[in-house]
Image 1 (cartoon, rainbow, N blue to C red):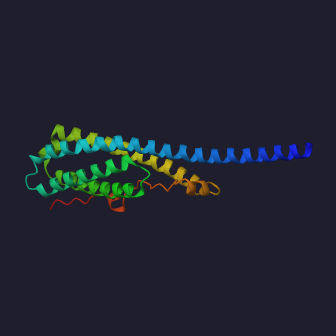
Image 2: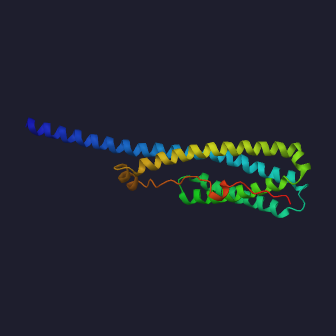
Length: 199
């Protein structure tokens, strides 16, 4: 009788430990997923700030760059595409395709802005314009903040992906739909400095 009670207590204790271990791993994955979603929210704030600055920048240069209408239109179009991609990614940062789309849209926007700023160098009056200088300074500051926020997001995503990939967490991740998160990276083309040539 006493032996049966001891065996039941041991079985119950082992089952309780397994359940606690299972709950602990599940909760750890939830916490890490929430951390990378919060990190994306910080990126989203900075991206929206940049998206708000771009129309002001374009308006500032419009009067000076009458022959560069194509470039101005391309920047506005790229800004609108990036804005929409940012909204989709912000609604679900764990959606890998939405993050990939945002990566591509941001690359296009960065390239367009680079061309706009490079072309603006050819207009001395525009370079000396105080509004233009203030907008460029604000855009640079925002770009730095986006870079820091992107790094924090990528660190959070890496921690989450590592945790969900290790055994036995991978079993729980698979059972409960903890999918791999996508890093927010700068495409190779956006890393290159724009080429400026005044002939």
